[in-house]
Length: 190
Image 1: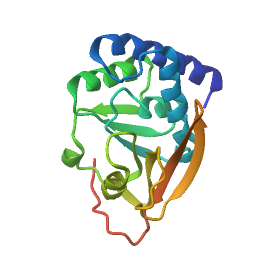
Image 2: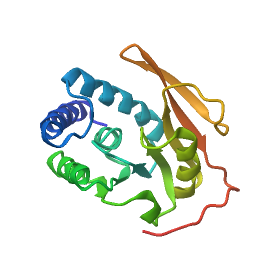
Image 3: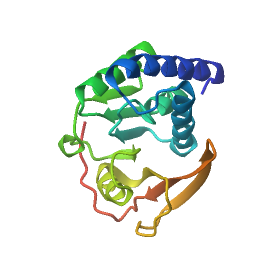
Image 4: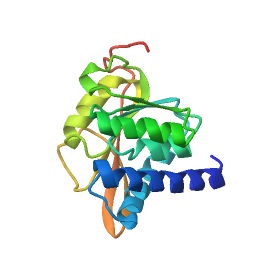
C-alpha cells in the first residue's frame, strides 16, 4: 500500500460519501467526525485481509468496510454485494472516481450470488453476527476466513478469533472465523 495515495483516496472517499449521503441516505452518519469513525472502524479489516486474493463483502451499503479495504489493499480483488440500487450506484461511482480497479460492485442479494470460493467474506452491520458467520462460510473456500464486527460480546458464536479495538472511546471486536479444510463448501466459478 502506498501510504500517501491511500490517505488521499480515503479523504476523497469521505468527501464523496458526504456528498452522496446528503441526498440518498447511505448511512446515519451525518457529520465528518461520524464518517471518519466508520473509516477507522473499517480499517480494522485491512491487516486481516492483507495477503488474501479474493474477498466478498456482503451488504456493502455506503462502502464500509469494502471501499476502505479496496483503497488500502489494491492487490486484493473485492466483490461487493449491495441489492439496494441507489447504494449500488454509489459503490460503482466510488470505484470509478477513486480508480479502484480491484472493486467490483454487484447489485445482488447474497442468496443469488453463485461464487463460493473466496479467500474471505465480510459483512458489517447487515446480519445478526451468528447468522452471518453461518452464511458467510458457505461462500469461502476451505482455509479461508469469515469476518464480522461485534459490538457486544456474545457467547453463542462458533470458535472464532477476536481482535479487540476501540473507536471513539467505544470498545469493538473484529471476529474472524476460520473455515476448516474439511468443511463442506460447494465450489463455484466466476
